[in-house]
Length: 184
Ligand code: FNR
Image (cartoon, rainbow, N blue to C red; front, side, top):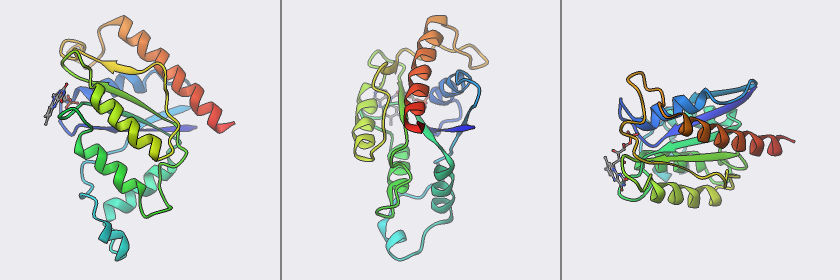
């Protein structure tokens, strides 16, 4: 079983990112299991925790969890044209202590979303910048920018627009191809 960890850039109960991610999780083929990895309780990264061997319990369980995960799907809104702090914090926590990054070599993919037309482009690309540094192979094409999210979902959180579902299937297929290449 290949494990996909889903990390969200939103803590909101009714988050569009979470709802879109749930739709996307259902598009993986047999042999893949997608699960949300919660990052909202991670304290802001402070290097002293690692340097003084005083590591918070949530850091330990998050880092251990990520070690079991084979590939990472990021689904995020854009905050002030960049990556929401909660998601950047999770990247920072997972990247340390130095030399023990949980991200190294893990295939990844990004979906950004927004109620507007720009579709979280700024967050998507700032996140890419970090993932390149963290040595995470990343789906390049298709890029996934989901705009105008208000009205995209029905009352059960299901994506109503069939073309968007088809597009997301193409995106998941590209992600699965990337994962297979890295498992070979
Ligand atoms: C936003 N929003 C936003 N949208 C956008 O397209 N570009 C932006 O720079 C910002 N900036 C921003 C900052 C902050 C602090 C908030 C709270 C919101 C709006 C944002 O895209 C919208 O609320 C998303 O729907 C939030 O995603 P979730 O929480 O539904 O997953």
